[in-house]
Amino acid sequence: MTADELATETRRLVDRVSTWTPPRWAASSASGTGTRADRFHALVQELADQAADAEDQPRRAVPRLSPDTALPDQLKVVVADLIAAARDDEARLAVATKRVLTTKRAL
Picture 1 (cartoon, rainbow, N blue to C red):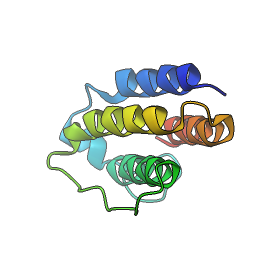
Picture 2: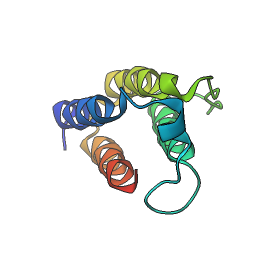
Picture 3: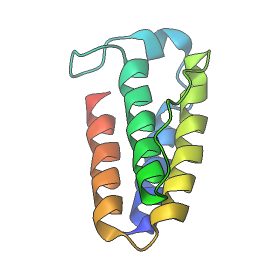
Picture 4: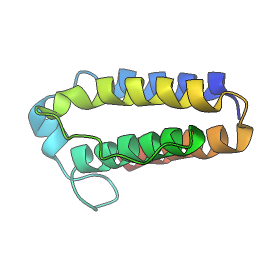
């Protein structure tokens, strides 16, 4: 998969959740593990870790901002960082894209 595919799938996910209210974020995820916000933040953290790995930088915890409605913006920033760091790493981009798609289904 390519950087464009990751950007497209991220945009689709962000478009889907960007109008969610706090109660909707607080609902259980379709997978039954944690809330939708928990699941989404886990995606943001995983992609931030991939970006750090691609840059040979230490992994850092992504802060959990309040309210959860900030999560789509966090995802956009992290994905932009990942694309910048791994534009030519198709394997890393494929893993990231699959993770975005998996999260979209789990919400």
